[in-house]
Length: 132
Image (cartoon, rainbow, N blue to C red):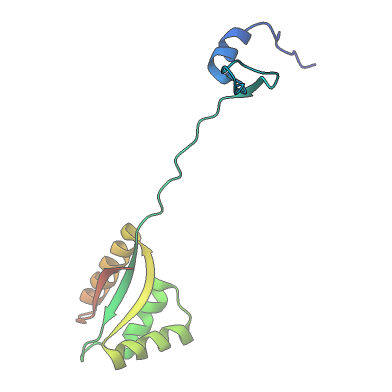
């Protein structure tokens, strides 16, 4: 059995905190007219700002094997073989290619992971960030 609160308890505090009086002003003297209403005061919340997005760019070099680049794209950017191969060829032919677009912290982490992995495998592969 649910116990309902007494409507008289806390009503004055609730009325002071949440209810506001809205009055339609009469054109003649500013006297409240028949359109008096009681409404609920609401706070407008500021919408959170969307994070700035950054591109993770992979740079071409003449020493890193194409297979290693495809492995990196699959492992760190979750691309399938076809998409990774397409991006790798784009980087190879044009000198730079976009691996993905992420919020700053994620993009920075991915760049660091790729650079560390390349260094561990003794490849000069380079990645960098650019504001999208």
